[in-house]
Amino acid sequence: MEIYLISIAVAMLVGLMLTRPAKLLGLPAVTGYLVAGLLIGPYVLGAFGIEGLGFTSMEQVESMSILTQTALGFIAFTIGNEFRLSQLKSMGKKAITIGIAQAVGTTIAVDAILIAVHLMFPNVLSLPSAIVLGAIASATAPAATLMVVRQYKADGPLTRLLMLVVAIDDAVGLILFSVSFGVASAISHGSINVVGVVLEPLIEIVLSFALGTVMGYLLNFVERFFHSRSKRMAVSVGFVMLTVGLSMIRFNIGGIHFGFSLLLVCMMTGTVFCNICSTSEELMGRIETWTVPLNILFFVISGAELDLKIIANAATLAVGIVYIFSRSLGKYFGARFSCQLTNCEKPITDNLGITLLPQAGVALGMAMTAMTLPGGALVRNVILFSVLIYELVGPALTKRSLMRAGEINPEGKTSARVHNSPKA
Image (tube, rainbow, N blue to C red; front, side, top):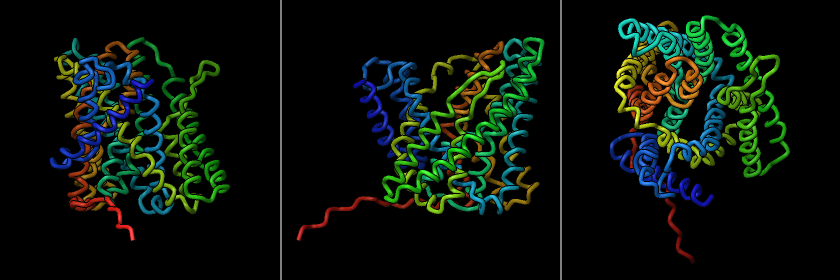
């Protein structure tokens, strides 16, 4: 147990230290955290086998999943705060249109290019793998985007629309993946499972929204019994943790798989709570402060999970490069077209697509599901490679786009230090 505690402490401290050179290079702090994870991961310092110096095996990294899942829950809960009725009235229709259009457009673009690769090199990339990769391409990682927005206190029309689109993207991506996975399974096995393709994804989304709604109302009800700021914050933190735990429950009834999407459940909890609690903004601010160390660990552990061995595989590299290129085109032009369709301002039209490039946890979860298909190992490795690139480059591109839109002010030299006042 002490080794795990030392490893967590080292992860947090190394992550914090690497934000210094990241800042000098003009990179977001999240990039420093990810690089720190790579350094102390199983393929660099961890390879020396010195317990406590780094994560010595991938199993040790995966044992930290409870921390990353909890952090993801808090991130989704915070994003739910963006779905206030005032926000939805002003740009809800635009966000829904753009969220759906750019996700579907990206899937079509990646599918078309990868199916062409399959036709030219059928021994390298199978048709089911190409179809599944197209659906996975629709997913965008909310965590890196939120961290950049928080660090630079970004605010404006692009930032507000971005947070809504990223949240909507998860629900759309889940549906696209379920349908594509069903089609890919039918091609592989010669039969299609209607329940798995249509019914189970819809059940997951409905159950997730229902559970999130219940937890949001319960949080508001329980929070009323406490008046001190510290106890109200503790209640909020406890409820988010409880929500994360409940969203992990899976069960079968009559051959139908029932489950929840952690991101959708926690996002809905935050949405309901912020719209019915008159003091929600103050509580959200306190929760954000409390979760800073947890978010640092989330990204450092995410960096440690990146498998550097995949770079040695030529097929993975080749398909991965095509996947990254086609997905980037799909996200950029899909967002650009849908922004023009909804008459968005030019700064939003020019920059939104770039901010949607980060990809991580949701895509990796989809890739693990795709492992059951013939050629599923290639799908997983391609997604691992793309996550490595997108997570290292994506936050910097998001920062650059928000600066171009005028929603991030140039950083100045600021300090939060308060020196001790001399005693009288």
